[in-house]
Image 1 (tube, rainbow, N blue to C red):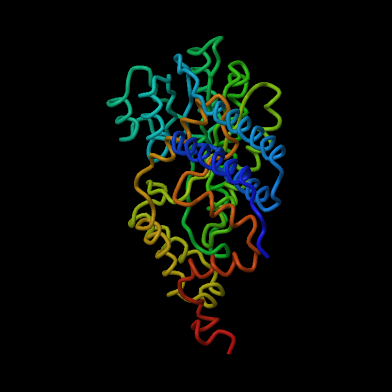
Image 2: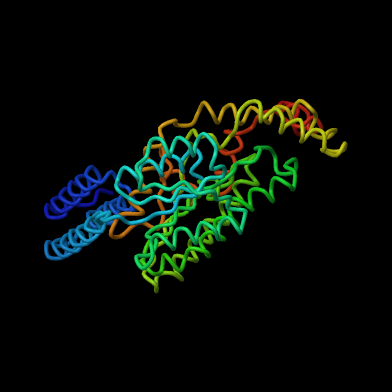
Length: 383
């Protein structure tokens, strides 16, 4: 059955789509503006199918334009004005890149590092301006966090700290949840979750004073299940929920909270081939005989393939992450969630609406390596 389309509806749909396209091209959808444009396009599609009258088409068009204007105005970046930011985990990866990027933008950067004498810390001192301070800060060490707080508070004084970027994180060794040692679960939670909570609680008085920003680097692994990432994904899921609760609670203080959920980017988080081999051997040495028998040595050793595939399939250019963090720190109205990476927003969207059985099928297809020995080969499964 064909539905009639009024000329006014077609005109409004075209103008709205064009306006949305211009906004997306201008801002490259750093926050949630892109999702709003998609929603408006869907709204207009429904309006066209209903063949609204000229009057209601114009009313809906005016409201859409006003909404897009308000959303786009929220993308405006605030002046740096010497604002101070704290970045944890600045030794390498995202944290290292963020410390350099924010320093170039004119921020006063406090770069927390795990090793103040390491190569990453020396590189920051050598390449960045005098505004950047490298500070010893193991996020699992309460005393080091307190020491950094004292130094930061002394320097910012009444201005407060504009932003805390909780970036420090570890991956542990990706393998099936039953095989991951409890020590790895505890280590992931200690760094990725409890460390971020400890830093947040310690520095919140300075953030409330400036009505600033809390930015937590989570992961898509904390949104939908990824095989071999039980320890890492669980810690990131906890961090995401903590951030969401804090977003609600801190709004009354004028503090805005954003969560960054990057896709696959190549950093030093995964470690090296040598560290993989050592970790794998440690797992084998302490694995109960029953598990070794059920899974089989070949299957356990094949877990290393995940890291090799991960290294080759990830994007070495971390610019998208730098851009969204800059937006979260500087935008007048930052988004609650950012999804930098190839097609990450659409993947999260699909994971939210696709039936679980369908999602599980594709995730298992994507990450399956070999079968545990007790199950036999895939072709004999179920026989």
